[in-house]
Length: 196
Image (cartoon, rainbow, N blue to C red; front, side, top):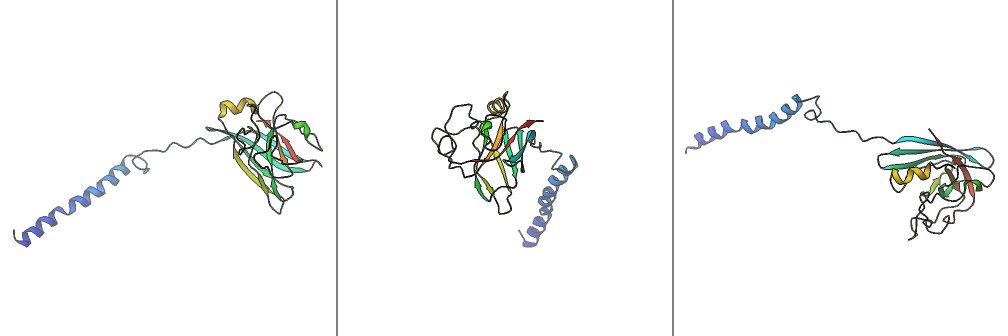
């Protein structure tokens, strides 16, 4: 076949792949609102705030706020702390929604409906109320966002029992293994969760 004839035949075929390549995006754009053929991604349900706590120091001064949120995967705790000594502090959910200064002992022990020992590094742990440590900066503020283990079915009744739930911030870091409180020391701040 002469090369000029071969060239003309190849040239005649070349626009087809280009047109085919353009046809798919044009077809998809015509199918909806420009979002890839009218396909819509389902938005992930957002967590809803189900309880709030106002944290206070033994002096009565504000120590920030905490929120208990419920999403499709269970419960999460969000804390915005202020007025605390800089450093790392243990932070836990406690069994009684009562915060009487100065020691906040009225909040009881850690929330532990399953009777485990304390700490994520303890083979017999952890308590439902065991959170990760809170780091407080030089300005006295710190934030924490932590997903509670287990789903809503297990967590909900424990959080909303008759005597309530408190959040306590401790003086020292939690070592994540020593029962019953991770050697986290004195209770610096406390707040009671109030349902929305």
